[in-house]
Figure 1 (tube, rainbow, N blue to C red):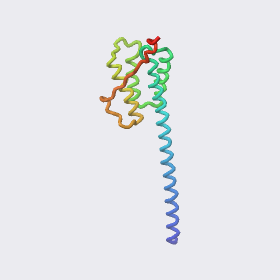
Figure 2: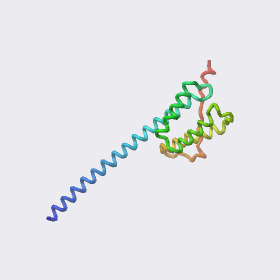
Figure 3: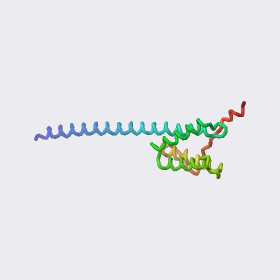
Figure 4: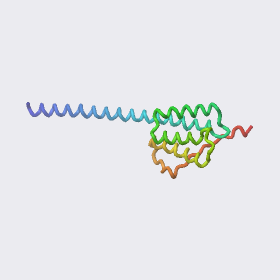
Length: 143
């Protein structure tokens, strides 16, 4: 075969390979971004549902929403998130007669920290420097 023909074939193969690789990498990044958005939405629902189980804002509907959000996390949550969720659930369950506010806050902080780790939130501080707190609206006291 002539050298120009061989060079043309190699050049064409390289061009096809490069564009195929570029397409594959772009699609892979898009799928990863979609997955991260989906995980974020489920984690966001869990964190928002916490408002329905806090102090005087706690309600049966809030507890159902929290249970549903927590159960859904078993589809996408990392092992760290699920372990932290289970520990937090064990602490807040009605049957726990040894509830401790400090332990509650530590477990909540760990849960939210694990979520941030799983979502790869930039500049997530070390666990021992991260604190999460829940606020109650206190709206029933305004009446």
